[in-house]
Length: 278
Ligand SMILES: [Zn+2]
Ligand SMILES: [Zn+2]
Image 1 (cartoon, rainbow, N blue to C red):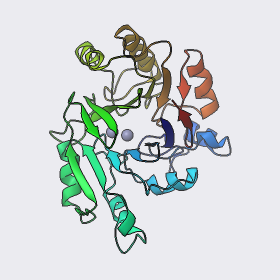
Image 2 (image 1 turned 90 degrees about the horizontal axis):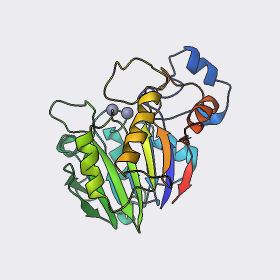
Image 3 (image 1 turned 90 degrees about the vertical axis):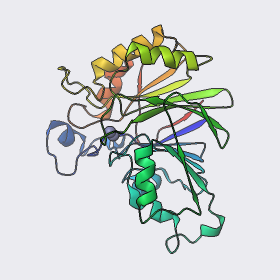
């Protein structure tokens, strides 16, 4: 499985264009790995996870095309993960390869699918909407996808999802945006797996925030606890590649400092343009 991170920031980007706080100021003029667009990941050039407002910039930054994307997984309806005008890029008159463009199956919760279906950018000829339900394994375009309920708050009545994606014996657990999962959820995840996942990209939004004021994301400290718990539940093992992902400028330092911080726990840090092969 080839994994490409097109973006690795939270909603406001990093640096936030309107922020001159310590972290945003430290990043400007520094290493390019610290410059983060809103989060999205491309697998094998044909499966995309999340469809936020920076998808155009992310593909230009990594010099890739999304033409072959036949599957789109959307985690939830927050605007950094779902930006409806993106669907217009696929359509006539904006697309000169429309006839050859593969149909795209969109897998998500009913709130997200409802918004897509109502959007002026929705193209039923080239789009299939497929509802994902927690813990119901689905086979789509050669992938096996297990949706997991996230600990996150989006629209009223919406169930934000994170996903375990398997193909050819390898697996990625894409786990942003979410706060720490409870033991019952860990137990259920463990039961759906035949072996620990090969890689996890885990929410690290709140960084070095020490007080647990926001339950719907992970701080660095909570991420360490979640990784430990996932080891106990056999969701991860020593062979799993563990990446901290989805960074807010509010409490995360520049990339090189984040790398040092997480490396002492055997954890890697995503950056825009990062490619991982499983
Ligand atoms: Zn987000
Ligand atoms: Zn969110």
